Length: 508
Image 1 (cartoon, one colour):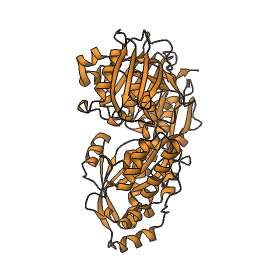
Image 2 (cartoon, rainbow, N blue to C red; image 1 turned 180 degrees about the vertical axis):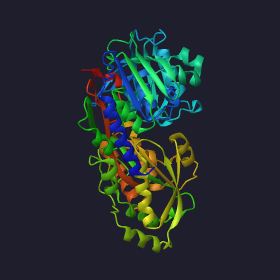
Image 3 (cartoon, helix red, strand yellow; image 1 turned 45 degrees about the vertical axis):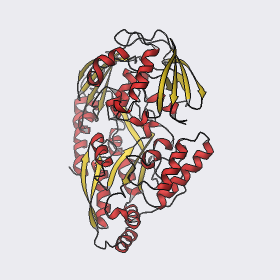
Image 4 (cartoon, rainbow, N blue to C red; image 1 turned 180 degrees about the horizontal axis):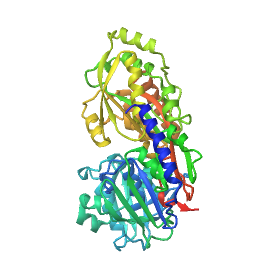
């Protein structure tokens, strides 16, 4: 469907919703049920085996971590560990909170913590996002309630990983059911437990009444009912007819059409996510020529596409990072929109008539069809015809690291961590996702990732990011703001790390 067709569809949906919404509201405040619509399913409720953003969001409700990051203050607070401290640069110690229960009634012990940390960090375990655990060397039980975690090397973002991406499992339960059992029948210590599931379609979470006192998380609302609705028109109709209380991740035109609707509030918040294209210079393609890579960036009218489809709150970028992240160097080589210069560079590189090139797209809600069409149209105008293949993230990642495509279009949110170690490093650290493997860039990135001195880290990242831009190893597009809409009965806001914390929601 074209952008015009999508817009007409949305207009029709709003008109229908307005007509239906004139009748009795189906609000669920009285039933104490928060109804959520999402476009994105999750393949597994075993956090370590899931691939989607919703997998991370669900994990924060079903499970707990040793520590918790307060997004408002930036401080790390006790969670399953009532105390934590550094023994040295490579060692952390945790005093495990007593009396914490899993959803099946088991008590949390130091053995559960040691088991989880050692299991998920073992390469043979196969954690899908191994970046979150690969820095762990081993965990050991020091006493009945004390655990010591040893790192392979000093990591400046160790606490970030532990706070957001290393949930603790029950040793007894996970040994019994494994990833397959945890995928559909998870047991954690989180503020909510799974009450029912229709895999890939619907999850109903119930407040865990025996949740431990002293947790930084809340669970004021009794039930969270999450349904997958792939079509934005469906979500919109459900929200405007008060059959859904929350939806997010839609385009600015949808947000504009929802303004001033009764009993619905629409908000927009900045997030760490960026859109970009990764370049593969290892395979035989026109992209091995720096002039072709520069031509691609010159051919893209990034500001116009961003303003039209992403929103005025977003920002065009020139670096391989989000400007708000620590270590992001903004003073880099720039390639402004200039189709004539793009055509000149292509001719100079030996492609006066252009060429065809495969493009791999990682499907997610931040790359709607109109954006894809606009980018492809810009490149087609200078003679670069892209043949698009769209895959879900896990499959797209496998295809990319397998070296099967010269160009990858996607977005990255840095796991919600405001440090380029979680973004630029992911792209150019010399490992599997990096299909450039520039020696100077790799050395600078890896040195920065192991460095504890902030100013030294900043200089190393700056050197790497400048070299990436000079050689056009990366096609930067823009940062993101996220739109969300909710019932006016709901008191809730979305955080910039894109971990939607429904456990913090309350009714007005």
